[in-house]
Length: 398
Image (cartoon, rainbow, N blue to C red; front, side, top):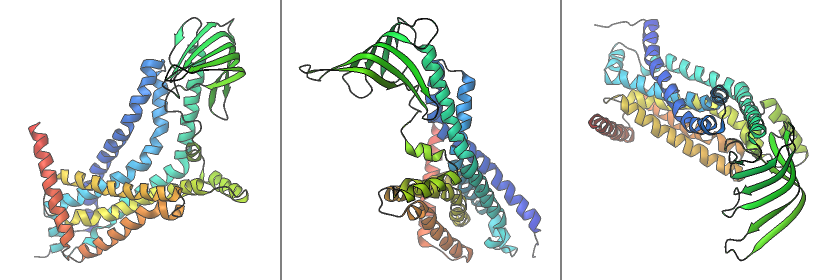
């Protein structure tokens, strides 16, 4: 008996299968990436006196950069888990028995990949530079406020990275200070002792720097062997104050990530006229377009792997997802490193993982779509299935 399944019903069913793992993957992957930053930012609340609402703002500004990575990851996970469940429960076989080929059930997966591509593209071209810029502005504002509020007279202040600051007197409510002694351990195991008669806080909004400027002082340093002593006299000495390790004032790549595509293209034209190196700018531009396209490539790779699966549990999809993502980022890091060293063109280096995995995905999809066996793919399937079952048993024991 030949059963006809309406396409609308079929596509609705597959879309529902895709949505749950996509949302779950988005939450899990984003939380994992946020964990490291959250721990550092919470230090601002516990040790630096920064308000929780201000830290939440910083986290919100970071979300576009994380969603850039986690949306493609979630597309892959959703594809693997949805197709894996349909295959493991025999629904794919039932569809094929009804005359529905693998290619006929692809529209929901294509729609998911295209939606992920459009969302990631919007993040990459619009929200990512705005979020990075807002993050640094907010952190600068916190650093400036923290510097002015916590530099109090006649106490040893250790709130700044690698510095212990003592101020003898702060006349009135101004920024001018008198009798300053600083222990600086930022660049050496042996601290430098810096003494200044006067000092003041200077903030530079354009350069995102908060500077403690000292006047009429000296720098004292002893060698590790305690046999050598150095002393330098200065009239003016500037010291950058850093609230946390999140700041990176001299990182040009961070500044490039804050620029829009139009601004990057203008920088590219200007530096080309001045015959300066264009590699970092070109790399940043290609990354803006390559990451969104990863949604399509990872979805393309996930379809044949998910459809080929015959048995197992959902843990299989997670394990396979991690392995594919690992391979993608190995190729990405390799290509980016080669591009920055000038060995590969930036376009080739950044697009390398998309090209390699895209070719593999097209080949596997054509073979699996024709119901032809792939010995290597069968071995991978069996190995990952045993690995996922082993992991599941261990977690159950715990």
